[in-house]
Amino acid sequence: MSQADAIFKAMCKEILEHGASSEGEDVRPRWEDGSPAHTWKRFGVVNRYDLSREFPILTLRGTNFKAAIDEILWIWQKKSNNIHDLNSRIWDSWADKDGTIGKAYGYQLGVKHQYKEGMFDQVDRVLYDLKHNPYSRRILTNIYNHQDLHAMHLYPCAYSMTFNVTGRKLNGLLNQRSNDVLVANNWNVVQYAVLLHMFAQVSGLEAGELVHVIADAHIYDRHVPLVEELLGREAYPAPRFVMNPEVKDFYSFTVEDFSLEDYKKGPQLKGIPVAV
Ligand SMILES: Nc1nc(=O)c2c([nH]1)NC[C@@H]1CN(c3ccc(C(=O)N[C@@H](CCC(=O)O)C(=O)O)cc3)CN21
Ligand SMILES: O=c1ccn([C@H]2C[C@H](O)[C@@H](COP(=O)(O)O)O2)c(=O)[nH]1
Image (tube, rainbow, N blue to C red; front, side, top):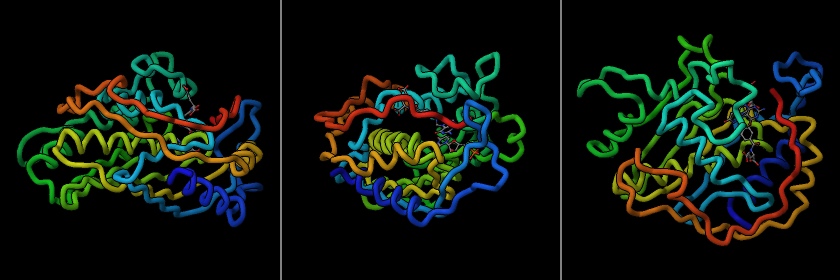
């Protein structure tokens, strides 16, 4: 069983056995038929993945590795908020007629700020600090910008990433306020694991630990039978993660620079409903 499977199973059991239901409360998200999308949730979940040991992808069912990388590059490298720059349909329900999701995610990472050394956006500031001052304890991004929340179609969920170097290893701490455990938990973990690998390689470091801090880790009511099915499944060893070692500039990575070897996984769950 991969490290990611073990963590995922333990978290789901914890939510289903000891979580709280939102039934009877006023909730925002809706199912396609208009009914409220209630959840079982656990507050304050912390998961640690040792990336130097193995790549944290689920084998109970497949996570779409390429689509997840495409979205993380859309946010962190293209710094785009327009679904026309994205190769999947996962943001379609939140886009306006021009295809934008408002001043969220990529938009925030592209905003330039004044620092002592000049103007940088948050991504370039991280790359600069990892190069010039890797032992700094001030290397982090934060896209939960209250000034612009009114102009975001969905408030950022994974909103802050802290980078911290120990020896030659680059560790990361992802802060997430809300996580749809079935649809996007492993999706987000895979994305930030790949991001950490990319930042490590272009900074002459190795990927260390990814710590995922989730405020509200929830399973939607209509996902409960699907999660129960996953909990009963067999898991496999983690695949091998391969990244093109030639790429030394963060902005040169493409989805084709990444692959997984021997990714053995359970069958895909068909038609998982996504609450909007
Ligand atoms: N309720 C909810 N859950 C989410 O996870 C979520 C939102 N809303 N709103 C915005 C984004 C969109 N996200 C999504 C939405 C769908 C998939 C999804 O269906 N993933 C499929 C593969 C998709 C593909 O192949 O194109 C998967 O199997 O992982 C992933 C992330 C994450 N976010
Ligand atoms: O990267 C993402 C983006 C979104 N989500 C999930 C978490 C929630 O289920 C919804 C957002 O609804 P809120 O009411 O704004 O919390 O989207 C995710 O897990 N990962």
